[in-house]
Image 1 (cartoon, rainbow, N blue to C red):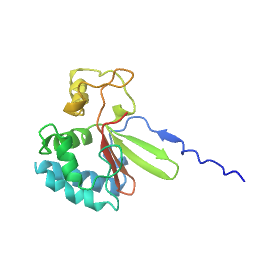
Image 2: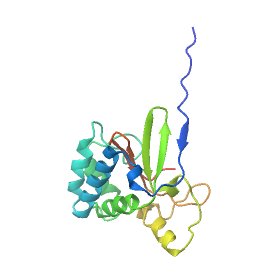
Image 3: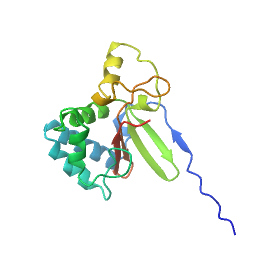
Image 4: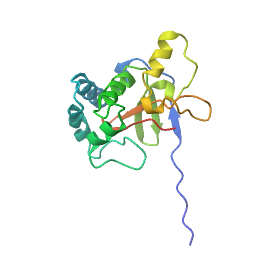
Length: 166
């Protein structure tokens, strides 16, 4: 007997959104917790929103780290986590998209990670580059675009990932 192979659910990505009232209350609450932690300037403050999740968010390919704060420090150019805090703040300040994958709805920042386009002006270019990890500045994807750091929170308030992968 052969088993039917499961195919991944199709993904529907919205147009670029800027109205935060379109976020679910749980998504808004998690976003605000992350931003509040970033405002402290202390990477340890991110433990609170990280620990709100049943499962830890992913910060790099290969699954959730044993100690997410140590991972965020290691990923930061300064090795203290300040780059991670600045990136999270910059990313969450950008427009976003709603992604529907079967029964799951995610909100992902920044929108231009999914809808890449040349920056319209100097402000848009600065916003794009503020979402690129220092170590990713020299790398680009197949189309020559930088690896933009993405952050996704589900409609139920679960923080899924904060990473720069293509």
